[in-house]
View 1 (tube, rainbow, N blue to C red):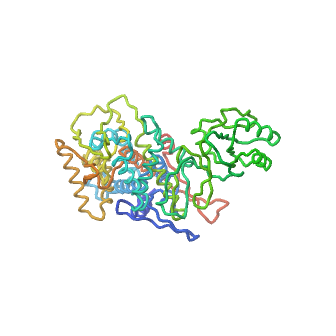
View 2 (view 1 turned 120 degrees about the vertical axis):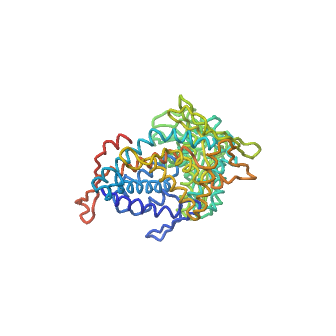
View 3 (view 1 turned 60 degrees about the vertical axis):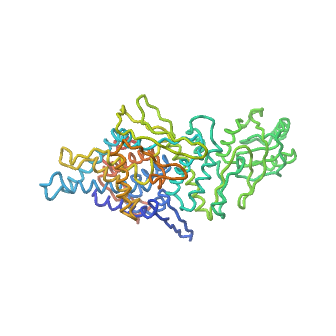
Length: 563
């Protein structure tokens, strides 16, 4: 496959996402045939909404790679496309130049096709074997580890605000950060590992939030209790702290009376059912003064089982105390125009938006923020020296950091494992530091540009786009960071005190782990698309007027092994 075609495809995707990239990026307006409109800054949302024609653009090669990375880390889809485009352009330029200056015509087309996978394989080898060590020695020492003992610290809010700035309108970032911090504090586990809390929130997020359209985002809030997104099938009766609840998946009509009598003996006042019950069951429950909620979703029932510790009643099972849970309160709640059932003690997140599409956008942003935090604080295990960072601690609402860079200290890293919670100032700090750390020989043994140089140039494209509105700021940021690296004897303070925020955190904070995984995903995607040999156009019996595209790769077996 010609590289020029591949460059055009990726450049077209890049042109779309660049409109919403960086702190000065705007929102993209989507319209449907129905007249519905939506504004979004989410890269994943933008890419998934595009009508892509070329098979590489709409098949598994590029979108699936972006989707897999975004799903794993919660962020990075726009930077993914930007890095991929810059990297592929660099490889194309290198192959066009030829193996030496004496070759005026450079590579032939056949030689270019062979040279591109060569570069991709070398990049993949560099990223998989050396990248973690380079980051640990040259980037991590200039970051720090955020402590989540109290997520209301300035650093925690700054990390979330930085994330939301890439997803939603700037005017809503602070409010969504506050709301997410409150959610995290309410669902904080007593365990020392914050990852457990994030894992719980991520797994149960569908059951922990309620979308409400037609209201401003400022109406979003936390409410007491778990919200069951169904109304009562029988009249709602008052429930006292001594009342009980039982979870039913189904029951048979022939034994309804005996079942109801058995439930009464346990003092059950509320029934939760995964299926719709018969009219006879509803009538008997009403006569027995029991409230019934039907067709409860699997996610909500799973969450209730985890919170209450009860065991669901299966078909033909004898009801016992292990199937009954005690409730302090259960009441209907009106959210928007819908009535739901709310049970207290836990808390649920009500997310509001002017329209359905905007509400979904806020929901995805908060869900992805939890996913991003889960990635940052995922426990790491290593038998060797791990990358060290300063630990940010809060005291009386003020967060500060004063540390000395340790880049000049020897590291005993053979296989780097980053410390959980490791972050670094945003605004290109990671890219500046890593591009400087990459070995930069002028060429390799074949006379071709080194792959580390190609990766370094691609990395610098990110801060160039961040400061594209003012190239002078790009040079100032690069000079400031390089001066700090060249003078390791001076204290490296990020100025995180709330009263005097330092210039290094003007653009927020970002995760070192997410950045590392992003580069790996981009290199893997570049390797995959550069291995494509031919795109064959075939016709199917059902769609004779349309063309189906099939991609054949000479290295498909290798791709599957790498995945």
